[in-house]
Length: 98
Length: 260
Image 1 (cartoon, rainbow over the protein chains, first blue to last red):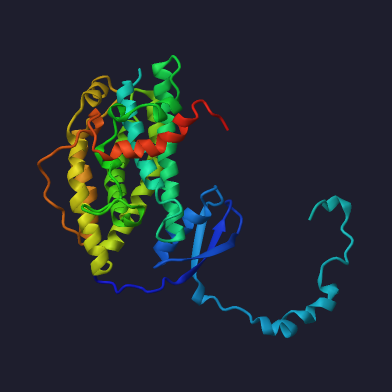
Image 2: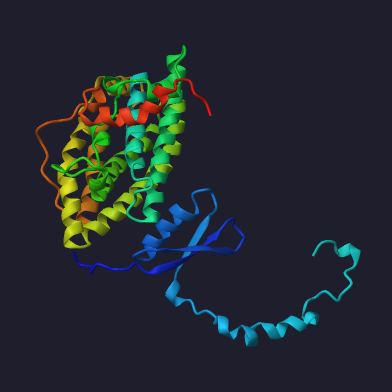
């Protein structure tokens, strides 16, 4: 009776690490009242088929995202700079798979 | 060495009947995430019941199977605590699904999980090796059930006036049924005697500590108990189990021996 009731639970982004050594990958979002609550819900919603060994939850409001309108100046200039891909090297066969 | 069949059925029936109750939330949870959480909980319990029925069926021999034990026994044959079979309804409520009370689900799962973390922990050293292995698996699951239900208990207790009142009412309604945990039945005594079961009365202090700590955190009052001690584990049930079994068993009885 101490906490005021939340009309809307905030949104959380959920990241799951599928195996030790791999990175956490974004897998979805959910509404929850706080971080602990979000972790438990993420466990029940996103790891019930053995998808994960670790979970992160991040308040969606704390994520700063690029604007779709900025697409032309943010991303399109890279499209004709193929030389930025490291594909112009001959890799000796002894190196094997890289 | 193996546990008495009646004792294994007692553990199995608890899990199956409570699993069936929690499954009633499937598709009706208060929020999507909780719908899935309660379905997970239900499937864990039904999974525990399956392992126990399979073990019991092997001991019974003949044509006994897990399905026969689950679907072709009647109310007096079931050995579950009365606590597990009661509907998710406040006292004096109508019986429609729309009156289902989430506070009751949470309180019941909390009271039962608080017991089962202790029971499964002790049963890991049962002289019945199969039962000990089932206990080790079930312990992990029920630890999460306790975490889930305890978390909600504290949130509802510290939430709004309405949530506090609902969870307190559910506690007042359900705590007295827990007296059945400590009243020894013949099959529990048999299991204790042959080293496959445990002394339930010896768990009471630990259970009280788990419950009291959570109630304190949730600012809830522990109601006084006394009076009627339920007898579900001896086959004398409330009127609610018959309806639960009718729903759960009707498909298997309408199509006996059906397979996928």
